[in-house]
Length: 252
Image 1 (cartoon, rainbow, N blue to C red):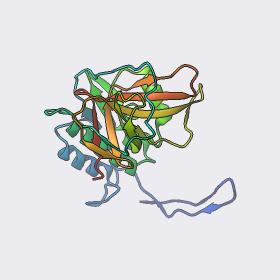
Image 2: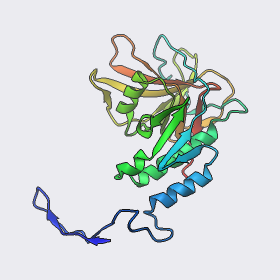
Image 3: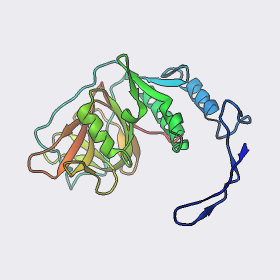
Image 4: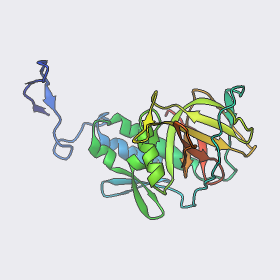
């Protein structure tokens, strides 16, 4: 550690820090130090070696190369107001995505611990069909990243992982599919159109697993955008099939 001089902020508040950490290569952390990023990332690599590889200082999440499925819609599948508050969704047996999503969620939790360290975040990427995808363009939290997600889905062609709390669930108004909507920032809109952003996951297959409102889930696959005519809303959709996945996100 190095002593640091204090300073005064623009509003006149005096800040008196005590020490500054030196560079990780010149002043290694003690064993089991919670701020030792390299040690924590190394443990994560060992726990998820089936899905994560490391080249130099860069960690890569290896995504399945199966082309994700997209399914369009000619109208917005609104939530049925009389629908239940529980949606059942399941993947087909033999699906290989869930271990990858478990690794992705673990990476996201580690990065959140170092949210003020862009260097740590930049060391994680995803790889799909030989392409390296930055973590910011692959993994999204709907509570913070809805605007950026809308841009990536509109402009990109790679699958993404989206984590969020189930805000509501039920049958669509035309009774054609089950639907969950994930919570976003209140009143989040898509610039420059100003349309409200809604993030929804749909499924037609009757083979299903239960999810509760308020439960944190993660949806992976090829998301699409949908904007109805004369509407103030912009929808991001993920249709669930054997090449996409909706799963409960573990907290540990």
